Image (tube, rainbow, N blue to C red; front, side, top):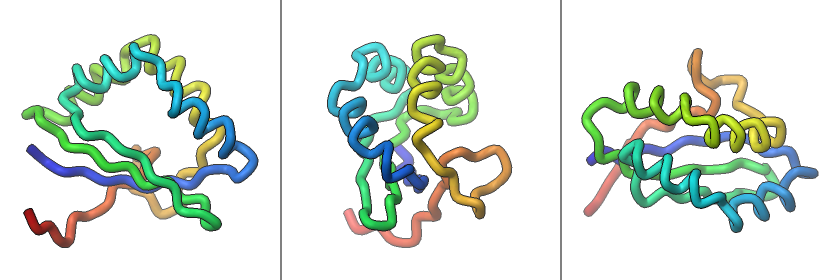
Length: 109
């Protein structure tokens, strides 16, 4: 299992709708995420900076392949089409990232 964390900006005017969408996440999205070997997925909000912090535990063996499979799912594409216009990727993210992946510098079980 690998713990993963990511950060992304959110437009302040989009916060109410973004929160509503995630309170009412479509069941198909939860299934797709689970099929991609992602468990314990959480998203946190830091205001007033309007930063989203996502954490999950990856239980697979090929993250790139699982992410590619997830990205091909039509319902996931629908979800992203709604959510992405609300989001503000960090300018300092790596090439190919939408959510900027964070380095794990400490863990205490």
